[in-house]
Image (cartoon, rainbow, N blue to C red):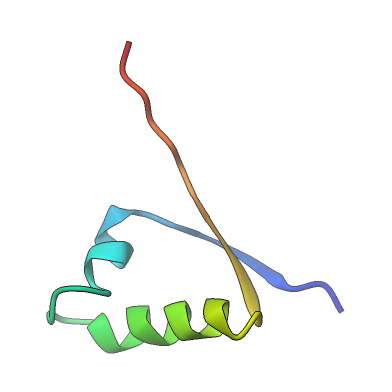
Length: 48
């Protein structure tokens, strides 16, 4: 079975470090990634 691919933005990653609304869901997503249950991707934006 192919792992689910999820794109996260900075607000999701911030919730890993800051306690705010939906931090519990963001932490569960992080834990799923650590367990290898999902693949996380993030957009890299570079300003030139």
